[in-house]
Image (tube, rainbow, N blue to C red; front, side, top):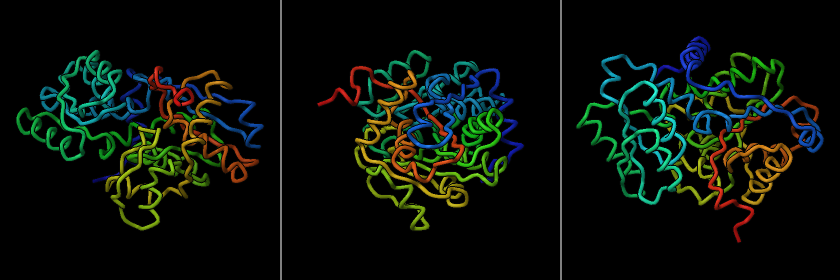
Length: 317
């Protein structure tokens, strides 16, 4: 599996430009003072479907040949990738089938349906999700688009960092959340090419620190992931993302659940923007380990802003 280089990432940026938003980079005097650093937030919460996932899904769908595209696309996801692929497929005028586990949040199911995708329910296990998707591919010939183990998806995710660096060309550190590793891998590939002197740091919930443990062990650690509030980061690395992160990621910092909630609340209160818990993880790391960033110019990828407004974490008792 060939890794995307800078030319591939730039081509992805051109490919998705008619469909994806060029999201803003925001600053905050409050966070600068709290951390003693100059912080630049790349706001993928303002992306289509409310998450960076739209970049990778769109690049994958738009990269299909016409004959391939006519067969449609399929994936398994209960979150942002489901919505992203559904919309990307609708924009190309091709069918999309999304395998979603029973019990997936109604707000996410409704969004996928609104984008015109067919939803196939399965049991809430990884094996059931994969089996259902494989059956659809075998029956229909549809193209399986993995949420992160796909070079086109990783190249699309990398365009967020490409835009950040084009707007803020001098950064000392870039901090990104780590789940399955698609965004973190894209960040690594773009930053290592454009800013080779910059440190690339991952951030993970302490209850789901499988990527940190995997990189420390030198192989993928497939242990159960805890029930972190950062639901977008409850996925494990795959061979593609592990290979990229093990080469380029300087370290992974972990934060606890209370720190994630506090960081999320601070962004809402101080910056007046909506981010989801997964986006708050790198912010929490920035606050917790501020001594490491003091005096630096720091880019932070805010991965998305899809939140169930009836279940805000600071209102749950």
